[in-house]
Image (cartoon, rainbow, N blue to C red):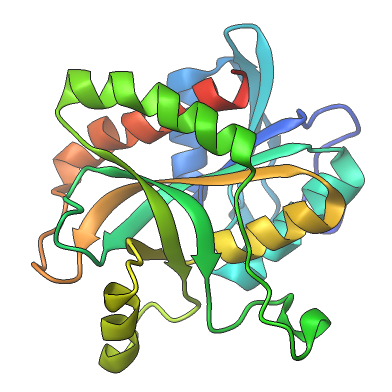
Length: 238
């Protein structure tokens, strides 16, 4: 057991899906895993382990923002032996060509700051996804996209620790440089995975649009989020 994850040795799989919301972790486990069992609930941050098509999988909530994710990712890797970590979550679109319900695969994640920033000092480190996971997720996403009328995008994303951001000038520069969407955790996840020699990827569903102000209706969120979970699980074991 660790300070923030109460699972016993052997209860965490090498492959971990990481939604920010602990209730989404429960939904993913109940919807996609066989024999899912609750393995941690410290501070209400739920984690479940089960199997998907015979493969052991853990779904662990990470909380909101990079500081929170950093705690859980560090413990999952260092204390429980996680080797593949895939963030599954929602994001806000920043480009006109990215639509509500589309899925974005984060090739790289820019950020104004993360818990790891002090390590690099003057270096502007570029957090990037594992190429093998990215390639597998792209291939898995094409079949789902065709069947369900969505588009899968791959490119740079923005990880922000400020949800109510007031930097319109920064948003404009990111749009100008092709940043697809904004979320709150991937940059730190990619950095930690690189540090420990693990694989990481962010698979995101567009739930809101910063330009059009559209938002995914609550009754469509679960159905739409199924797409990214299927892509993430397929990529993990490709």
